[in-house]
Length: 213
Length: 201
Image (tube, rainbow over all chains, first blue to last red; front, top):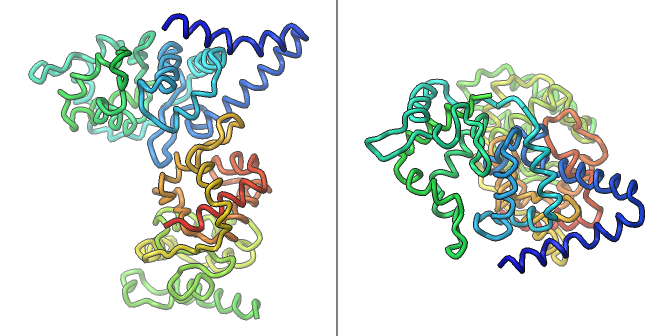
């Protein structure tokens, strides 16, 4: 497996090396241009300031998302650990360098949350987020996602995320995440919790985190 | 002839806006006003798009944007601006509900040979060229949702012109990613998409 990865990295690096040895400044400019074109492409669906957007499906906010989380998810789409045909198409053409550059770019954004979830659910959601629900074996979300829901490393930021996106992900967790048995990933952590949360609890937690800046 | 139709539309728009909305069930005048151009059963006619089965919020939104002159492509300007000049917001809402509930028929007027290429572009986009997949917003069956329009089964001519016009800078005030998306499509891609969609539901 390591060998394959190494080969992939080397193959992806070849065109860059070839161009870059020719003219370093020109190379930097064209890769900047390619990055900006790709960002514009991402923003078409994820919102003009990557704040999330509602197409036929709720499309997640990327602004402020953890760099490592974005990188891992892009790889998960490519490796089919995470099932999503649209994002497979999008991700499989991205070089590892482009994946990192995009992840860093979106991580640095601090767009305002859409804040359109029902306010009435926020208090109930805050309790679940901070204390969990011991009766249903639900741990406190903040233990991993952090007190401000900013996430860490491969654990996603939830602050400002679209509530309907969170809902869709949690109710479909076992159908979308961790789809390669030979390659178990961090998504396994959420599997029991996604089962143990009721739909009403998911809605409440989603409403709470969605309005956090 | 066009002038005559236009003045009739304008007059009827004024008449219909004075009818209270509680009388909606009895009020065929309003619908008749629309179906002159959009077809007897609102299936579309020449440049006037099919309204039957279109999403409710999209129809309402468009009527309001004709009235506000933000949708500004030539036919909108020539016909729909006047037709909606005296339309109340309530009437726009009622008309939207009415047309969205009619059963749509496919125009089936595209180029069959281009339909497959159009389908690929619709479903997958072209990630290498940074072209997004239409299906992400318009739905896997082009059925639309909320204020995002249903595209399946609209006429080839209408779809083609609309895509061209986004790229030409019309309707730029709309809060929509469409100007950005459509301006990058080639003439061949537009023909393929319009063909594919014209055979849809």
